[in-house]
Amino acid sequence: MAVTPSSTSLEALEALDLDPAFALHRGGKLEIRSTVPVRDAGDLALAYTPGVARVCSAIAEEPELAKDYTWISNVVAVVSDGTAVLGLGDIGPAAAMPVMEGKALLFKQFAGVDAVPICLDCTGVDELVETVVRLAPSFGGINLEDISAPRCFEVEARLRELLDIPVFHDDQHGTAIVTLAALKNAARLTGRSLGELRVVVAGAGASGIAVSRFLLDAGVGDIAVADSKGIVHEGRDGLNPVKQALARDTNKAGLHGATEQALAGADVFVGLSGSTVSERAIASMAPDSIVFALSNPTPEVLPEVAGRYARVVATGRSDFPNQINNVLAFPGVFRGAMDVRATTITENMKVAAAEALAAVVGDELSADCVIPSPFDERVAPAVIAAVSAQARADGVARL
Image 1 (cartoon, rainbow, N blue to C red):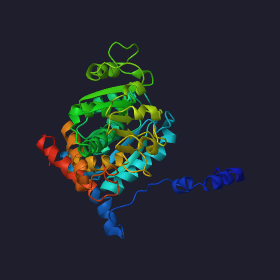
Image 2: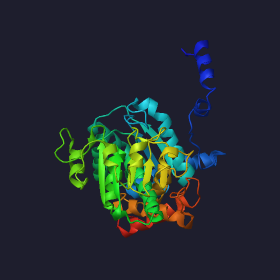
Image 3: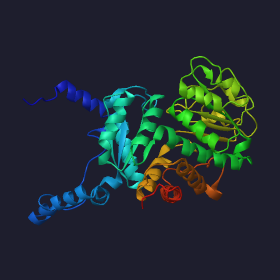
Image 4: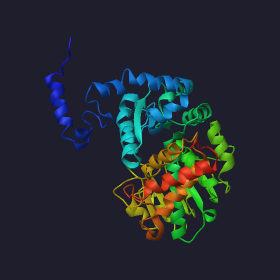
């Protein structure tokens, strides 16, 4: 028997639709469209039976042909378990779907990559890995999204080992790529090298740890990383294995205590924690300081406050200058990798993406422009070209 919404339900929906965000999401943000016409029996015979059987038989004999004669080479799975969604936390797979739909929309909008949102009703590492491996033959790449730390590190590492297609946890690497690009330009603006910078990162989740490691590998002088219990340092009780490794590789200054204490004399603050930082702490930073307050929707410190002391201020929001937005990276990274049928995304490919992104700014560099807009039409082509070229240089391209 068909079930119809009650009048109360309809009234509730109508009330929700008064909010433009709900109205935009009504019915979802995606649809599937065919790329070939089916106008008559002849078209039908080619698109489906009997013509399709010839293609299937050829692929059965030579599986690599699937990359040429299906959509696989242009489609990414956007996979989440809903345990770390935006600033909302563990809200589950159903509630994560609007975000994954949005991610798929951005893939298409900014790099012409088709993407399918997949929200999984499991959270165990083994279950997640097994499920994605079983789904992988239908896709040319896997974008992991909003999976909580520290599980996300093991999930990605195991999938990268098991699959011969790009696997990329955007919360880690997309954030790291765009942050490095912006920091390169901010350092250039203030006349410093990366090696001269002392950085404090607030947040030791997926993005905080990935950003910290990426910046270290890029040559940043020293980084202190703080979680909710303070600076991560060797000998601190209660550190999981990921944070223990981070403690060994960071904090050369041997700092202890809270984030705000570490900011005294620091050159750079990168906020990825959802916490707040006082004006006094920002004022205590070194001259020509750089503040990336990236938590959404509320930055750790408001730009108008940070701007009283810092030379460069960036946020994760589109209504302030210098938006550090992953959409600057992930569409082009996947497009570039998939265009050459890369088997993986290497560290060098991520660095190449960051350097290409930073270079787009060029002579437009200013305190309010250390990173291009996501709508700058130069961004995607620059990142795509850099990633494809580096994949070939690294020997992971198949084309």
